[in-house]
Amino acid sequence: MVDRLANSEANSKRIGVVEGCFGTAGQPLAIPGRVLIGEGVLTKLCRKKPKARQFFLFNDILVYGNIVIQKKKYNKQHIIPLESVTIDTVEDEGELRNGWLIKTPTKSFAVYAATATEKSEWMNHINKCVADLLEKSGKSPSSEHAAVWVPDSEATVCMRCQKIKFTPVSRRHHCRKCGFVVCGPCSEKKFLLPSQSSKPVRVCEFCYDQLSAGQTGGGFSAHLDTFGRSPSKFPGNNVSDDDDDDDSSD
Image 1 (tube, one colour):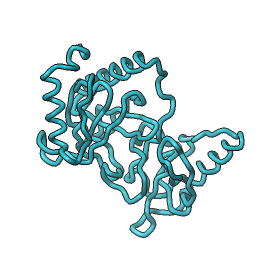
Image 2 (cartoon, helix red, strand yellow):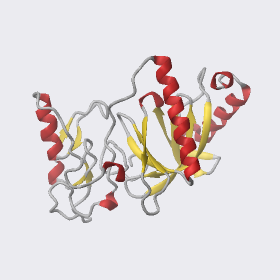
Image 3 (cartoon, one colour):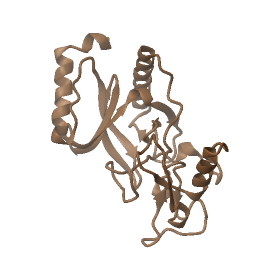
Image 4 (cartoon, one colour):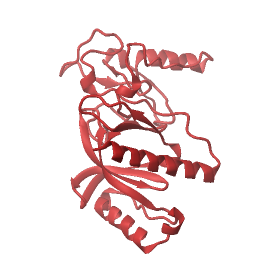
């Protein structure tokens, strides 16, 4: 069915509408063979708090952006190639229900649908698109993904030293390798993570030591359960710096 829609006029118009909603804030989306599978509003768990984002699923990419005017204008467009995507369900907790993780080598975060049915539909369509792409390319599913960030609200003290309390002066930072919320002294070092950035990025002291040992043959283990934290409980993502709140940086 996707192949039949690829060159249809209806599909071209739908993609054109999406491009128009992003305007100059987005990249062109219409290419031969690309099909818009579906769209909808999902709640993305950002660094500061959950926020509504408009998502568009194509047969080869996942696109999302900030909602300026619903169905009319979006900005801060993000494009994720589906070939590198893996997804995992997230258990319901409190008001955060019907969620799943979207994981890639460069960015990982959680989204939540309004209903269980909507969640199932999104996950099934994403998995089908990924499977079709991998079958055509002959590639294997991605085994590497960026850390899922712990939201700021989940940490009142540094998750590494367990001593420094966060205040307006003592700011929160995120380790790009394990995703923990850490203090400045525990995250003074940087390390090159090629899948995330061409420049060295902030990592906590624990991960820096493990990564450095790995370079000399020691291997690396993130030990996400070191402090009794479950990775699936703390969805988030990776960005370029710590002065971040929203999708340009959340």
